[in-house]
Image (cartoon, rainbow, N blue to C red; front, top):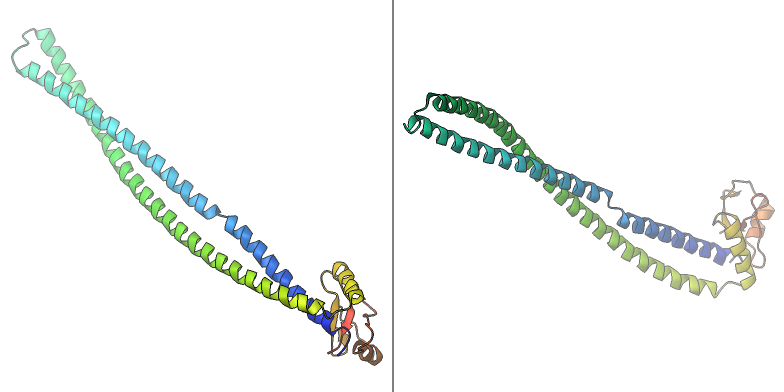
Length: 233
């Protein structure tokens, strides 16, 4: 067994640890992101506000129409009830009734427009509410899946930690120090496997003597080009 064997195994473990930790960081970020939920809630809030606004206007116009009709009924009762005899007052009543009829007609036109707008606002509200419920369901499902993935990753990290500690006990502290230095200097890749007479890290072709030395059980051999520890299985 080459001296670099355990370092190569350690590097594979460390690579898995980094990948798992990176994915956990991604998931934690995703769990805090709820832009779609906030947007759906705002859509519903806006729809609710629009609905209240148009419904409020509709109620006001209905009250106005009701009051105008009562006023017109009172004026017609006075006109046709025989209580008013004065021609001027009769003329004023007729003018007032005509004006009220015109006003009521205008109010009814506006009321009809508001009824249509109210129906549209009700529909918009229902759609916004349904959309929010859908987003909430999807958000909860996504979070549930992500939370489950985090649990799996934590179990993986616990297992890798046990394996790493067992492996460290088999590595000479001096070799481990060299490994740690190269990990820091070489972007997390301290040990390069030899494949088809080449360093898999930098692609440099190795001599037969260098490959044979990489199989040594007594010394470490570094790639002459990239400086990484060579491992020849």
